[in-house]
Image 1 (cartoon, helix red, strand yellow):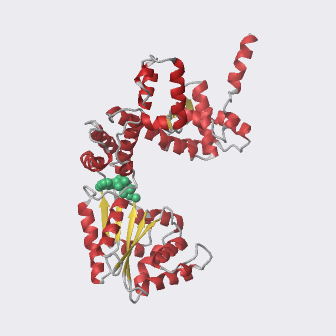
Image 2 (cartoon, rainbow, N blue to C red; image 1 turned 90 degrees about the vertical axis):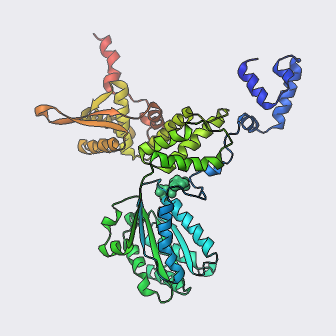
Length: 452
Ligand code: ADP
Ligand code: MG
């Protein structure tokens, strides 16, 4: 029996007799069949896994740990501002800025939990969290705030159908009836403004003038440091009574964050020494993003477990990094418009048929043919040049401008994505027709040679 088979049988708990192939063949077959029938199709995969991860949940980005290392000063500052609510005062509005993965959402969820601990019934201070990536219109923002306050289901504001003034007054009345301080967190507030303008923020920052009994304070969170530059100056100054910046984590801070999570996530000895520092260093180099550090650790551990290994090693982290990068590029390519995909397909075809680099003219010529086959209108060369620049900015192609002397300038274009992504695009529903496209010149080659 081959080594691999032996290993699988071992994991399935088949008797040593069978492993050594000592017993009669018929006996082995019946035993295996019986075993197969008893177990579901998942059995062999479950058996194969050596447990490295004790609690996978702890490694999910949605998990909120009990402590947030390196954010205690920020938490304390926010707590100090909000604490005035317990004296019946309106806490200052706060704008929190910070790049993705710097713990802004985690900190606000943490604060929300602490507020509930301090005031379980919400008798003085009510915490309302809104994710503006999802709730991104004026109507839905007001409706959402209102409905988090209105207990009576019958009286809730409908998802659509009311005039905006009615939604606002209903929300305002439900706030004012309660004689409390409301802390409203608008996470990813820039998404709300870019989708629906700053009108709703104007109304919310002014609402206290309309309230007799209750008070409302706002906490805006944004990944974009320049977000307030585009606001109405009155909204900007009201919203940013206090301003905080969450700086990116360095490698040491990310190491502490991961170590803290790993204690609850892994079995003893499940992680090799260098794994956490490597995840931290890789993420610090990119953006100081704790989400990425956690993803690296989780994917590395899952890979190790799936391979039936007993520990997570640095090699698993490196392969996790490749996987994350590949997933990111593939998502970006999937999201391209049909026109951009066609331009990209032109670059892919030129790379395959000719050489690594090509000019805009060569891409444009192939692009024209591909548009004909796909039955779509071809854009001007100028517009296609713009689309190439966009692909360049997304890191999908690399384009540099070169001078052709008195003939003007052109771009030298090179593909920057791996073969797996090219294969994926070729199989894209919209691109199937051009999968086997060959340029007319290439098709003619054998014919020309025959005629020589
Ligand atoms: P942001 O909202 O700034 O993009 P998140 O708060 O979503 O970032 O954080 C991303 C992930 O990193 C979350 O899983 C979060 O729990 C974790 N995280 C961020 N900062 C810390 C920290 N200081 N301690 C522990 N986990 C953290
Ligand atoms: Mg966030």
